[in-house]
Amino acid sequence: MPPIEPRRIRTLIMGAAGRDFHNFNTVLRDDPRYDVIAFTATQIPDIAGRAYPAELAGPLYPDGIPIYSESELELLVRERAIDQVLFSYSDVSHAYVMDRASAALSAGADFRLLGPGATMLRSRRPVVAVTAVRTGCGKSQTTRVLVTALRQAGRQVVVVRHPMPYGDLAAQAVQRFATLDDLELHRVTIEEREEYEPHLQAGSVVFAGVDYQRILAAAEEEADVVLWDGGNNDLPFYAPDVHVVVLDPLRPGHERTYYPGQVNLRMADIAIINKVDGATAEQMDEVRRSLDELNPTAQRFEAESPVSVLEPGRIAGRRVVVVEDGPSVTHGEMKFGAGLVAARAEGAAAIVDPRPYAVGSIAATYAEFPNTGPVLPAMGYSPAQVRDLQETLARVPADVVVIGTPIDLVRLVHIDKPTVRVQYDLRVVDGGDLGAAVLNRLERVPA
Image (tube, rainbow, N blue to C red; front, side):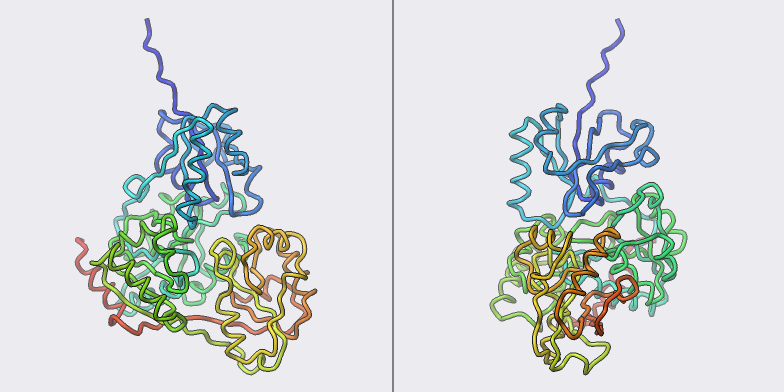
C-alpha cells in the first residue's frame, strides 16, 4: 500500500503588500508542507481583489494566490479550513496584533509570527540596516547621513528600500532606480517617490520590488556595502552587520508597545533618539528609560531633526494648508510633521484645516484615521487618489500650500496655489560621530 501523503498545512498570510510577500518568498514558496490559500491586505488601498502572480508564486501555485481584504479574515479561516494564520505586516500596536490573533484563533486557526532567523537573507556584502520603532521617526534622513559618511570613506553604497509594490507585481519583482526618469519608467506612486527621490537626487542607486533574494543578488553586483532603508517599523529583510534603530520621543512609550518596533530596539547595535529639539524633558526621560531597560548595550546617540524652508519668506502672514507624509500621519499616528512645524515657525497667519474640504478617498482616509491632525496626508497610491488629493487642495481656501513631503509634489499633482517645500535633516547633538561609529563597526566585519 503506497504511503499516504501528509496533508499540507493550509495557510493564510495577513499582510499589506510587503512583508507578507517576503515571508512567503523566503519561508513558504518552495516548501511542499505548506499550502498558502490566500493573502489578506490592509493599510494599502486597492490591493485586495488582486492576486500574487503565478510568475512570483512558483511551481506549487500555478494559478497564483488570491488577495482578500483583511475584513474577511474570520470568514476565510472558517470557509477555507485554514490551519494557520501568519501575521506579516508592521507598525501596529501589540494590542492590535493580539486582537487579530484572537480573531484567527476563535475561527479555528493557529496564529504565528515569523522571526528574523527565518526571514532575514544573508548577503555576501556588509549590510547596514536603518529601521525604527515607528514609522515617521526619521529613518530617511538617517539613511542619507549614513550614505554620505560611507561614500566619503570610499565605500560604494547601494540602497535597498523596503518594498512598496503597489502596481504590477510581476513587473515589479526587481526594480532599479538610478535617475528620476526611472521613477516615470516604473510608474511609481507618490509614496514610493517620497522614499526614492531624495536618494536619487543625492546620487544613490536604489533597488526595490518584490523578490528580495533576486534584488540582493543585483545589489551585490554594484555595491561593497548594502544599506537597507527600512519601511514603517518593520524588521530588516537582510541580516545586518550594523543595525541602526531610530526612536521618536514625541511618541514616548511607543518603542515598547508597537510591533515589531520593540524587536528592532532589542536587536539594535546603534540607537538614535531623534527629534530631541521638539521633545519635553519628561518625554526624553521615558524613551531613555525604555532604551536602558530593553537594550542597555546599544551605542546611543541623540539628534535633532531641523526643518528648513526651501523658499523662505513666502509663509509669513499667509493662510497655509500643509501637506504631510501620508503613512506618518495616518497609521503612524503623528498628528503633524515637518510641514506644520515649518509653517508655525515661519509665522503663518493661519493653518487652514483641510479636513472639511476633503473629497473621495481623501475623505475616506480621514474617516479611517480620525486622529489625523489639521494636515493633508499626501496619499497617492492610485491615479484616482491623486485626483482626489488635487481636488481637495483646490477646495481648501488657503493662500499657500506648504509641502512637508520629501518630494516635489507639483511634478505629480496640479496645484492651483503657490507652493513652499520643506525639508528635514538629522543633526547629532550627543554621542559623537554617527558615521564614524558605523564605519568602525563595519571594519570588524569579517571579509
